[in-house]
Image (cartoon, rainbow, N blue to C red; front, top):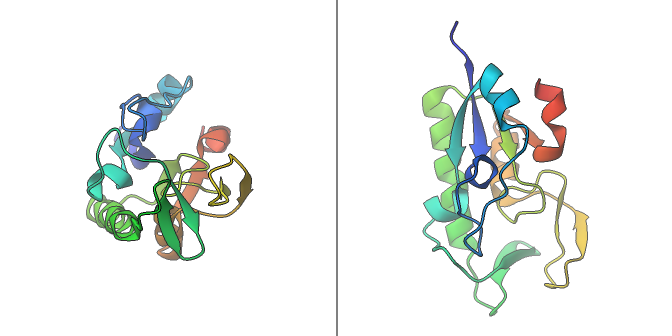
Length: 145
């Protein structure tokens, strides 16, 4: 039987693509693999940012890194590529990394680089949701199993 394809933040499958060169590999990966074909994707890397990279947070309508550089264009580029991939593969669901400036589903950091979390969505999450793609955080995987 053909499994449904689902977009997933590459860091959640163990790819070392986080800003600091580590991953956020999920413990429940095997359960997801039983039900879905996972399509790993990192909008930040696909948007042209490096590993490692300076941490960035959303501040108003911009994404600013910790050194004060505006990196919004990279985040928009990565989000656009994520949407194109979903459209090309017919993907209707995504599991993205909470709190990330790209992938945050319900929460993001507040832009002060003090680890303060606020309600909000990352750039990729916003775009995918605006096009009707269901977006879940890694804390909501039970809803997909």
